[in-house]
Length: 223
Ligand SMILES: N[C@@H](CCC(=O)N[C@@H](CS)C(=O)NCC(=O)O)C(=O)O
Image (cartoon, rainbow, N blue to C red; front, side, top):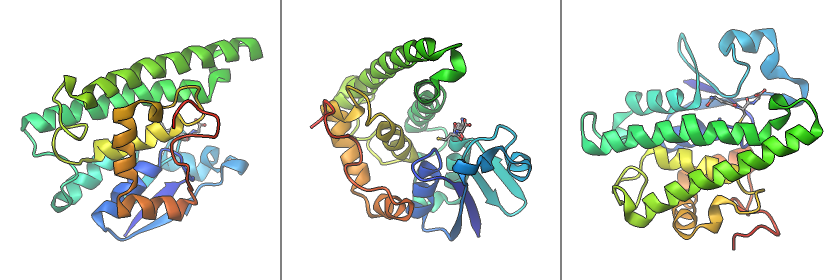
């Protein structure tokens, strides 16, 4: 049985939803961020970067969200959460998953922790503002893709649902407090609503206590 170290709504949400889509047996292990459990010696043995999540698969302790999702897809190919290796769809899938994990997610982390990149509160506010602007530009690129300017499918990696769609949905949720959240863009709104409506995704939300509205906060620019 897998174990997933998680905190509600954190980067652990994507692998949690992937586990639900697969129908695998797993146990959620709560990481108490209020007490910095993710910086404790036992946790750092599992993930030396002190970040959430970690997946335990037998003797394997795996960190990095995208790596965990890909490993689960590899272990359960019957779940169909990634296109066939070597296919054009797989190439697009790699491209978008890497874009999400290395570009959009990284900028979102700057948005959430601006104080790590500044010397004082004014500097942190400036970093946060720039990060929000840059996230907006990245979301516009994904919006154009979903509108059919790129490989043009209903989903991020083409015609079939994949774990890249789950990953995108998780990151879009993180923008809900922005002046112009992901859900303010019509194609992204359609996409993330479609992903969030899936029974497996709903189960992962329910288990983490995530309630609607999922992608906006009152007063945001999104409907
Ligand atoms: N690249 C890492 C980033 C994970 C990450 O930053 N997780 C956040 C929660 S969403 C975290 O643990 N933050 C605590 C910290 O940075 O101290 C991954 O995808 O696993």
